[in-house]
Amino acid sequence: MNLKKLLFGKSNLDEMQELALLKIERNGFWIGFWGLVLSMAVQAALADPSEGFQEIRGEWIVLMCMAVYTVIACVRNGIWDRRIPATPKANIAVSLFSATVTALILSLLSYKNYQEPVTAVYTFVIQFILLSIVLIVTLSFTTALYHKKRQKLDEENDSISSKQKQ
Amino acid sequence: MKNLKLKLARMEKDLSQTELAKRIGVTRQTIGMVESGDYNPTLNLCIQICKELDKTLNDLFWEEEDNEP
Image (cartoon, rainbow over all chains, first blue to last red):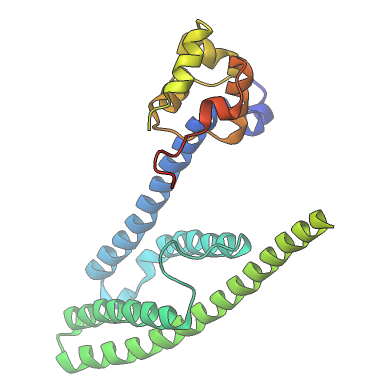
C-alpha cells in the first residue's frame, strides 16, 4: 500500500466517526498529560535529593511540548479556556492557586528530604512568591496575545460582513 | 430529540438505514444516531440526506415551536 496515501489519504471515517475519534483522542491527550504530571510528582517524591530532578527530565520535556503546543494552537485560533475567562482577576486567582499547590508539594518534598520544618516553610514561601510572579507574568502575556488575536479575528469577520453588505 | 420525519421519509423511499447510509457514504450507525437524535449532523450531511430522500431541509430538520406566543 502507498505510504503517502496511508498517512495523508482520504479518511475512511464519516463525520460522526471523526467526531467520536476526536473525543477519544482528546481523552487520550488529557490522560497522557495528567499521567505525566502524576508520574513526575511520584518520581520527584521518591528521587534521591542529591540527584535533583534529573530523573524526570524526559517527562518534563514531553509535558512542556504538549503544554506549549496547546497554548500556541489555542492562541492562534483565538481560543481561551472553556470556563475560566481571560481576565487579570482570573489570571491572579489561577496563578495564586497553582503557586500554592506547587509550593506546598515542593515544601513537603523539602521536609521529606531534609527533615527541617523551617527550611520547608522557607521553601514554601520562596517558591510561592517566585511561582506567583512567574505565573502572573506568563498568563498576562498569554492573555494579551489571546486578546490581540481575538480582536484580529473579529475584525476579519466584520470586514467580510461589511463587504457583503456593500 | 428523535427525528421521526427523517425515519418516515426514509421508509417512504423504502430504504433501510444501511441502504441510505451506503448511498450517502456514511455508516449505518451515523444514520441511526441522526434518527435517534444522538448525533447532530453537519449541514453538509443534512443536505446530502435531503437530496437522497428528495426532501428539503425544512421537511426533515426544522422543528416547529409548540409554545410560540
